[in-house]
Image: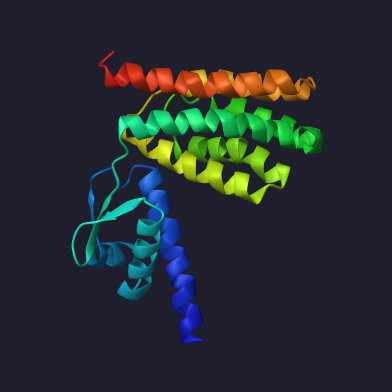
Length: 213
């Protein structure tokens, strides 16, 4: 029973810390100290330590000392390489899932995109919706390797997007709607092209910010 409880607490700690990293509560480069985090989460050190080791294995954290880590910094080069591979994988995910997509699911997602698009600032709810939309295609495709690959690349590029906030909620809303509208119209090619264009626009906006534009 004790071992099972520790396992559950480790999973809870992992989920909470991962969320804090991706939602910028723990920004890139920040030191993450086991004891302080355990106090903050009100969880004992052992499950927090296990969660930190797991996040380090996933490259979200880097080791900094015997009991501390730092949130990983994703370089611009890694970001743009990741976006390029995402273009290939996510357009293929649409291709593989196209015949299995449920129309009512697409319509519901479209309504949520419009509703959340009315808030110009990037919120946790918008990040969660972004995850659901982009991961819907590899999930529906049934290809577990594709899902894992896209999820890992999204985490990589997300770290850079969080470090350099793009402030592109209105643009993302339009681009997500273009993907969904093409799918609702039965246009697989159009949806794939809209996905590639969306990811290229994200890369272009990030480049502008890095250049100080």
